[in-house]
Length: 126
Length: 126
DNA sequence: CGGCATCCCTTATGATACTG
DNA sequence: CAGTATCATAAGGGATGCCG
Image 1 (cartoon, each protein chain N blue to C red):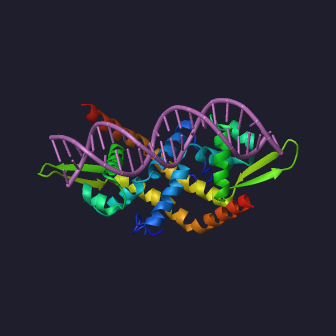
Image 2 (spheres, rainbow over the protein chains, first blue to last red):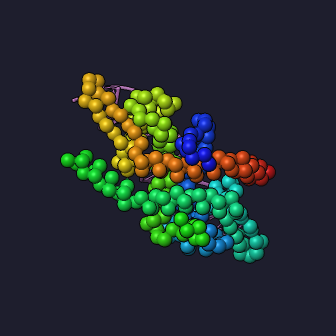
Image 3 (cartoon, rainbow over the protein chains, first blue to last red):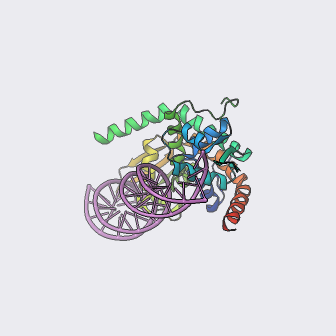
């Protein structure tokens, strides 16, 4: 990456594309699912139990979207009852690493941001 | 960043915090505004003209949120008519760089992701 | 010029029930 | 066990009008 012009997004289309990725990572369940799968391959209900508060519906949706984008693989074992194994693909792992990099930055500056917010809100109410 | 355990988010709270940041960057106008301001300090309507399709309302909201988090500075010149200058803070610039890093990765893998989507959608309709 | 309030619509998300 | 369908609600965002 050329850090002399770090912020240039060359076209409207590219900007939308980047936003799309950030929005996906920023939705309610994508990051928890990706983080969970980064540790090991898991079955549907294993993932579900590992993630506090996720509904069956939202887990299905989140997994489908990630699968569609090639971030996770889905393998059905035709047993009875059926078992479906989910795993992060190399692409998905790379995305997760990128997201975590940004996440680490965010956490590192957490208190700084909180102080700004507190100051801002104080001035508002004054 | 410790790349031996790149995906570990230590707590539920931290995970939500990271998601919050990603969601903010992933909303409709934050990235365009940040990218625009990364080039130079600008006034309200300058920014508005620079960003195709943004409404006055959404520009105001986006700027307020960024200001609240300490990502941009807001300076009012008490002239008539009033002029308000916005600029990226060092914190905001750093965030933008982080976002662009992830963005560059996303763009680099754009076609790969598109191929996955096309294949997935083809199988669905078959 | 810059900003806020209001109304409305679309989409995302969630709860629940049902199925191979 | 894994997944779909249906319905309800919350949040994001756009259009418009008024204000200092």
